[in-house]
Image: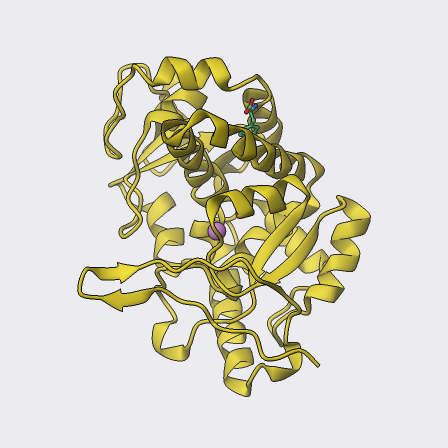
Length: 296
Ligand code: PHE
Ligand code: CO
């Protein structure tokens, strides 16, 4: 029997909260979850599923059910892995907390998705400054069953490994792409705008804010625009980018990024809340759902 894995969280210092990185890959210590851990999963699962009907991409909800992720208990990585391996060749690996960037990219490039083994405590149901099991498993894992999205995640990892050779600016641009798609992306479906980004899917407040609040911008996906757009990690997003399909993500990111990195070095970055004349802005008609101003 392995030793109980560590629960690696940020450190409180006199400079504020500092992220801590860890590279260990561990076995999910499923039998050590307490009744409270399972109860936290149940509560969060129920709350989000109720909220996400009509808000999350339908495929996300359907796949979550099909994978057997349910409200009753924390899922076992082994059980999810059987389905993932068969469908897209991906597997979940247990980790203790945040990974260093290059380690994270290498896992993705090899179709391994790192999942934090521990779940938040009841005192911090609504906001954590780092990923936990609920965010990673509930938010990220269902779309790894979609072959196109799964390929995008792998290509992203490979691109990240490459980007290391191009320097910190290239890495910052690539991180913005991940942030505005995998974590905070919206998708334009026949039924209207829907959520697919895991950072939204695992957050009660942001699930509502991103679609129902008049405050944030909702802008059509544009690769280089996104790679220039800064973001905030401690508030709801000021801008969400909307894809038309997962295929669009794949197609837009297939080209060699080397010339893009080179070109963007000379362009200023953009603040999170700005709207440009060239942006395709989505807006809410009078009770009519979402429309794309660029198309009318
Ligand atoms: N095409 C990118 C490159 O040449 C890799 C990449 C794919 C990056 C998908 C992000 C997402 O580096
Ligand atoms: Co995440």
